[in-house]
Length: 170
Image (cartoon, rainbow, N blue to C red):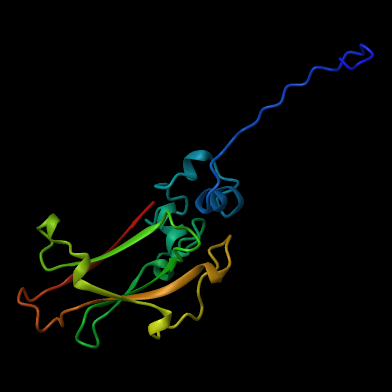
């Protein structure tokens, strides 16, 4: 009631408080905005291209388009060294996303993955930054292209083989 005793109409409001972060913004205002909640989850794959939403977001993909061949990292061995090139969100944009490139010479040894066995280079070392994805909700300036290379040449590797991977976590 106001000071004169006039009664107010009763109103019920529902307030939802959410933790706002770049991934949440991408889900709510980007390509997943109109999908059901189960299709918005980190591990969901709405376009069935075997790339979950977290990787689509982290690597600049579109979770509504089967873009596996565009989003996934590219391998090169032409220089005698195993090199993996991929696009990632800049840490200054979303520090909750981490990228851990690793190398192993034995896929049968889960503890054999080693982050110190690789070099990571970016734009400052000459990696091309042209044609970066727009992330379907963010400017391409939020992404960068990096190259990960084995510190040892393939021919110099005592085990005779090398495997690279990048673990993406939130």
